[in-house]
Image (cartoon, rainbow, N blue to C red; front, side):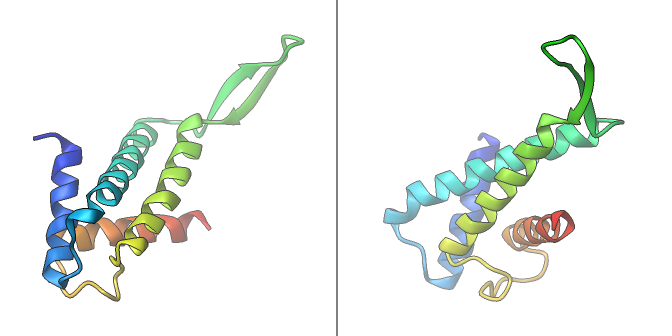
Length: 118
């Protein structure tokens, strides 16, 4: 089972426990899982870096420091994931699952990362 399938299953399980799951939402769940996977990949990439920037050359051949591209991917995917979870009715306030539930942890991680980025 792929990582996206695992994430989709967690989201579906959380929605079923709330009584909000419908087969019609499978595409939205898939999109949410994909954006969360992109978030995790970017976060993993950033965790391996020792610097938050990369060196690029301008047209004139001058060196310039720019933010590592993974940061943009991280924050873009974070925001998309947060909105997708909200659209699916999965927020910390609506989840009635236990505190150690995987989806609850997923949502908490995304919201905490959003707060850290503001």
